[in-house]
Amino acid sequence: MSHRMKLVRETPLEQNEVEPFGPRDLARRILRTTRQISLATLDRNKGFPYSAVTNLSVEPDGAIVFYGAAISHHSRNIMADPRVSVTLSQSEGRDVLRDRRMTLIGTAHRLDGIAFERAKNRYRRKFFRSSKYLDLADSCMFKLNVEAIHLNGGPARYSDSLSAEDLSVDLRGAEALLEQEETLIAHFERFPNKIKMLTSDINGVRGRWHIATIDPEGMDLASETEFHRLSFSQRVTTPATLLGLLS
Image (tube, rainbow, N blue to C red; front, side, top):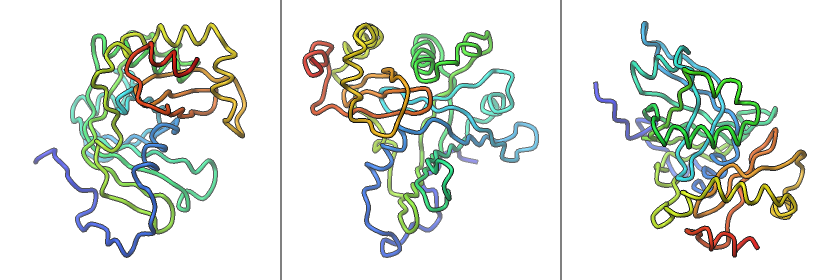
């Protein structure tokens, strides 16, 4: 059986059944501000869906990354069969059927080497208490290769037309920025008033904000309970440009 999947639905949605909205912008906002996901894998013994709730981390290029201990059921399932789906929901205790959510279908692959170390460090910056399990010998980080997206923005607001490219950030030419990401974050952390200035227009949240990731389009910020996306006014590809933009 082929592992390739091109559509979430066998019959595409009729446009007249959907209310007008901006699916790409909404999908990108959901991706960057959701903390937890429902992860469904295929049980390696019986083949039934096995669902777990876990934390969501997003790489600078927009790729979904999640943690798994090698001994966990979902990690062993992925190593036997990489097909998974993840659902991002932002109902925040409200009626989930009336709020925004997104399901991504694809294959998950274990990261290793420098990609593993960098993903782990970004995850640690987003989840402040994660060191107790991140530093265990069997820690794994999995990256999701998205093959299909189903976006539900609330009643009559659906889209099956998005692709992985709609969630991604172009990193071409930004090698220096990514290489210096941790150095830049450490620089901003030395000047807490700068971070306060960057987060001064975030309403309705409490707690101290930290910079978790930097990419050419913006920064992902994390507090103890929330994520926030800070978009740049222009594309940034070098440390000098970033420092000049935020000076």
